[in-house]
Amino acid sequence: MSKHSRRRQQNPSRKLVPQVQEEFTGKVQTKYGGAGLLRRFVGKLKLSRRLSRVSGPAPGRCFTTRDFLQGLLWGLLLGQQRQSAVAQLGQDPAALLALGLPDMPSQPSLSRFLSSCTERMGQQVLQINRALVRELRGPRAVATLDLDGEVVSTRGNPEGASYGYNPGRKGAKSYFALLGFWGEWRDILHAELYPGNQATVSADMAIRAYRMAKRGLPWGVRRVRLRADVAFYSHKFLAELEADQVTYCLAARMTAPLQPLVLGLEYRVLDDKWSIAEVQYRGHDWERPRRMVVIRERLDPQNPSPGQLELLHCEGHSYQVIVTNATWPPETVWHFYNGRSRLENIIKESQTDFGGNHVLSHTWGGNQMWLALSVLAYNLMNWFRERILGQRRQRRTAGWVRRTLIEIPATLVRRGRQWRLKLWRDHPAKDLFLQAVVALEGFSP
Image (tube, rainbow, N blue to C red):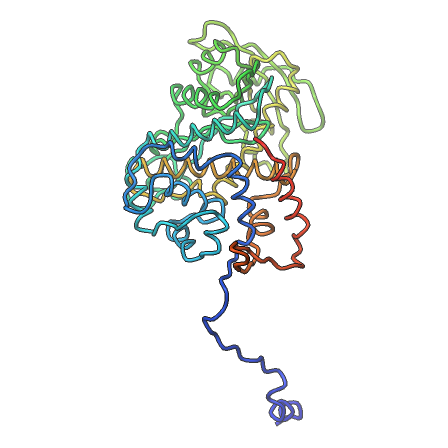
């Protein structure tokens, strides 16, 4: 036996950790000590009163439709994206007091509620969302609408799901969510589910998404601009936008008649990688030609794999075509269209932090309701970051807001006939928390 081994045997207690005895004698504690910030903000928006106007069945003796909607919405704001996790909040009396809730429905009750929801109820929640957008944004002269879609994978056989384009889980049934955004403010204006076999956007679907998203814009918007990818490219949709005098920039589908025209253009070199040109093109069923802006990218010989926006690839170049009725220079059209790339971050955050890609019910109406609540929760957090935390140009993620300001350990005590949440006096986010409290006192929608 070595010298060091004998030493460890002679002093076995040198690194022992003191034992801890558990006792259920402590005060009520919660990890959501900062949830009162969200409660104050939501209270300023009078959201409880708005949700009480949603008409629908409420399966249960103790809870109304508003109670179920508030419970699910608070769960999403706190990062809980499953029925069991939302119901778990009912075992945290301090969190319920911080949120202003008397109780939380159980998981079976939440499941029954979603099963009883109708598509109309989901539309009513989306109407509340659009009304809040109009009130918080106020009059605007110009607004940009962005349209996009995402595949929502499902498990089992939920109502309305079908087989279609599903790169995430090939061979599984899915939904297709069609989304409308306000580009300047990153607000979600509209979201609607379709069966998975309708992932190829029809002209009627595109027109409906545009109409519903436009309803969320404030009154007085004089000029509307629209961006969308190639999935929305159709003559009928473009004609609808032109009739409404909307300035649009859409990725054009590279049809067989358009390909030789694009290859034969004279391009103006922008740098060693990019070149640009434009042409007037008339489709076979078009009444008049439309302006096409063509961007050519020189591919790296060492890495010839084209990017996501490539529509035509030949002779070491990739091409993308943007159809537009704007009178801007070609470079401005290109940069304006590329601004929709921020949608990827919005969609990712709505999926990761607000359950936008989750399927919680076996019924169509329940999943529509969950999607509508996900949209509302995302916008509430978006407005909270902007109006209360002052994060306008560069915004922190919802996960950062929860970890920094909401998930603060606290102890619930009762003093002077009033409940108080006692937070750690030296918490790193103390100053930011107090600044948010002051901002909330002066906030008025």
